[in-house]
Length: 395
Image (cartoon, rainbow, N blue to C red; front, top):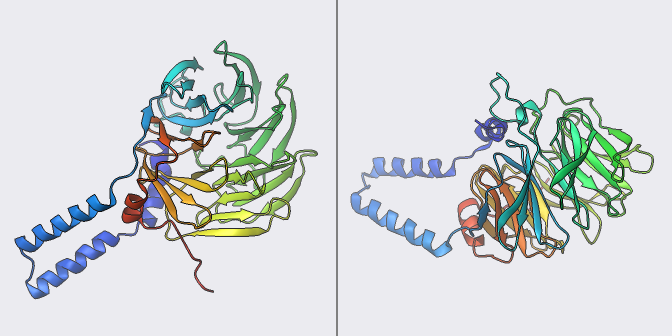
């Protein structure tokens, strides 16, 4: 059982509603009382179900590009020509040619030494490549945990590691400042963010999240880390405290806290600069300056969703559902599902290309590439799962 399966198991057991089984039980009860169930009725029901399924179609399919064992993170070049994907299991960085849909090169960090414990993957050991961020000119990639507890600088043209700087325990998420001069790395076990100068790898500070270290939390738990549009504020999810913490990047001081409901992932609206927070209850938009909620999309039920992405124009949300093997896109103006995509097992991290043409999703099979304009799977998604967001309950 992978770390994702273990992380999801208890939640799935508690949350899964079984409307289909309840409906079946009701039908069986009626059949028993009325003695009305027959082969003819069964055949008619099966035919009706097939006709209904045909009328709504299927989830949209994509192109799968294998990038290694246990794919983890991804980034995309500013010109939308290259995709960079980490493999936590193999401890590698794959460089994908998006035009030709193939892996052009792989930077090997060498697989971590195996141990005799019962851990089946690297996440539960706290090792192996996870996060990746590429500078604006596409010459250098910054990869977390390609070396243990470190940030690694990769020369993409030469395909080799050129610098390694020590962070703290199990760095995962990474963001670069808009000018590319600074890198911020989320150390998920230490529950800190380390900051480095990209020119020389010099550390220039650390952000300590509330609640102390997270050694008792799952190593592979989802976390969010983003910078404000002006680069002056750093937002980080704190799984220990159950909050989103806001830091000044100027003096590295905590300047605010958002009491979200188990925050999982973060995005910045490209137009308003507002912060969007994915939590157990839905997606809440906060004013990035006042930290007050500006808009809320409430989940209709309790779906398992750990990651989401915003389209480059900010009009569309894409949310991955690891237990469903699917991604849904939602129009922000209406809150309605606008697309449905079949990803294979355990879709996690996802991102749009900067030109908005492609939606890339990490799943167990590799990176799956979808035509972002394909809306053919929306009806199929809604038919199976219903609308994702609903009006808030009164009171």
